[in-house]
Length: 369
Image (spheres, rainbow, N blue to C red):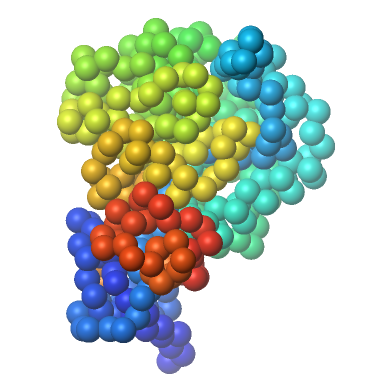
């Protein structure tokens, strides 16, 4: 029988608790078949790949938008003017962008994700059926896993028309990803969520990004995933924890738009499953190294926890085929970093080194299964 076996040596960040192991990994036909401990002279650091748990890849068509009005020497940021449907800059640009250009732009961002160590992502895809189709076309032939969450193109239409479009969107996606509970009549949102669940697909929604006025409404719909919760109170987090709903935070994006700083420490203390995403491509690159460094240095969260948020937790939330961790029997989604690069030489703790200072150019190779 044909065998495609690889043996990779170095310092391994292994298992669900991200233990440091010096040794080797055997990979056969994309599956980790053995992890062994032995002394090695290799300076490689073998780590699980990232999961970018919240993106808007359609924004790849606009990478340098104005961030707000200039007042004196400061920029006054306005989230609605950037992203709110239907008049936000992103939606104007998306309406004007030719279909072919949209696909090409998203494909470039997908290549960027792959090259920077991401093996899976979850995308809120605007544009209805054609929007979902565009992302599926952009992914053709690429080795990256996805959770595509589409949405109806025209939420102001009658419910029967919206549900018909939702049905067609769900034929080509993993579920529905809505902008927020204040952006659509709650009855319509409930119908969309119920229909989505009946088909055993995911229902995700933004909540508490600008303010907390939509958090209770979002919780009442019983979503599978919540995005942001930037303005959530301790009581809000307790409700989310009781409902066992995972949360995806987007620290760099929230900072850039002036939405605030998500209470990630409080989320973890409440027992929430927290993952991270880079959010709008027009505001931030899809580089998860940058997300980790920002989270570690701004939030002062334990480096191991930051790394888990950006890798294993994202894998769990997006329900990839394996847990995302480096364990025997799991799929091999690995990035091999050069521990002797000019940047990483001298680090004592590989997890802290990767979280606080590693860059895409420290990657020697990426293995996706």
